[in-house]
Image (cartoon, rainbow, N blue to C red):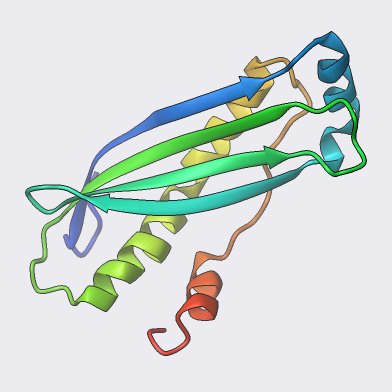
Length: 146
């Protein structure tokens, strides 16, 4: 898997960590009934490694609203490891590659994995359909770098 500009190459995509905490059957039934009230958050972090490798961690967190008494807890971390081939990229270009390019290109994979795992965990009606514009988020966070 290589991008068209050959600036980077994806080495691996995998589930790094997964956690489903369903304390009892009542919590499962409550969550299944109120799943549309839960919010899904995404947290991105990265870590550099040797040989120009970078691990991008995409952590999805399912949060119950305050008023829900019988809650479940779930989070899933998907990792994308890629190698930077273009050693002339500036720090800002690498930052944009990590925070915009990689998540944008691999978001369909992430949506599919999250939906599949939740459905296989018993939440048959779960679908992660949230749209995220990583370019807009980047511009909000780094207005002078955009």
